[in-house]
Length: 110
Length: 116
Image (cartoon, rainbow over the protein chains, first blue to last red):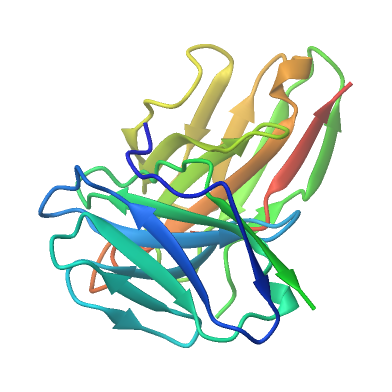
């Protein structure tokens, strides 16, 4: 049980921002929110993670709701290379393992 | 800093043979994880190891599968007497285990096992 809910698929136009939502209404206070993505025929790639505050890195931004029951991964300018399956995962440092759901398949149109 | 390395990238075995998949974690990482992705399915956790110890093997099939992470050398995922249903992509990940990004997992390119 991944315990997160994401839309199955989303579409975006190239060079436009993309907001990928994730619901994790049963998240515990110590669970981090991780985002990974998997490009076709490749291994998963770490994107970003956070606990309570919004986070930014060179790949994306993570906006976490104040009640932590949902979060949004933001790609500021989608490129064709961003087409992938994006996984939102809640993780506890006590368990180590990542439980992947079905993720959101992002299509980027030129 | 080289990333997680896995070899072979592709492995073909006949039913009943053994498959050995190797994973070298990122430099400085002491935690290794194995995941399996069956065709058209999601990634499933198999096992979590630290040097010389199995921490969590709750995702490992009860028979024919074993994993190790010795003090020296790569982590090995071993599948004995392979069957067609073992055909999948096997991904290894590593994490530092310490510091701010202690639990951030970095994945290798995977080994694609085909059982004939």
